[in-house]
Length: 161
Image (cartoon, rainbow, N blue to C red; front, side):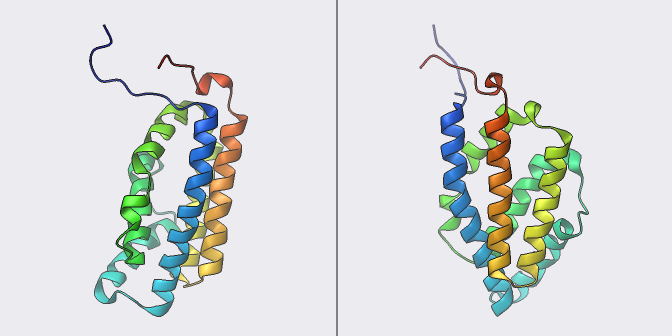
């Protein structure tokens, strides 16, 4: 009984707590990335990362590959910062689990809004504008949080612990 791997779903309260926590990390990541671009910290590697980030600014990526594109977006931002601690602080697995759990409850408008949000963040980072990057990142996270709060109860099934 109770053998094998099991992935525990998040309750709505846990999902909200996760989004509140991630907002601060996202804002910091976007702000630090924009500062690195503004100060030109990172040399040749920064140029390559900026080039990769332009795909998001220009919306030149495949929505069907959104989970992979989303992860690459955040990986690029983290790499641009040059901060050695951000990768370990970013709750990647919890975010992936939340997305898997709730993706069928998201509208195509929500996914399209993600693309718009990423474009706004990328524009601010590439412009070297830390305040605008932080603001765009916060707006994205708050929009996602609002969507979670509006999802039906079925998106957050009760599980036995």
